[in-house]
Image (cartoon, rainbow, N blue to C red):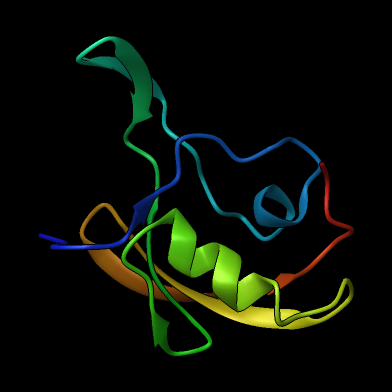
Amino acid sequence: PVKEGLLVERATKGGPAAAAGIRGGDRVAQAGMRRIYIGGDVIVAIDSQKIAGQFDVNVLLNRKRPGDTVTVTLYRGGKKMDVPVKLGERTS
């Protein structure tokens, strides 16, 4: 089991993560007043830097430029894998 990381709820169709094969959740669960998508990949590192949550992702990706490629380490179905992701333009 993964102790910390970022659960991918959704990977935007046509976006860099989806193009790299990163998968979002396929089931909906209730967490308090919020509905979340579960069953997606869990990102644990980007370029070998540990990820504990969205803040860490933002900090790391803000150091990169569109067109850069990062290595995303994730767990899917209990298996660890490294996925290269070519970054796209930032969205608002």
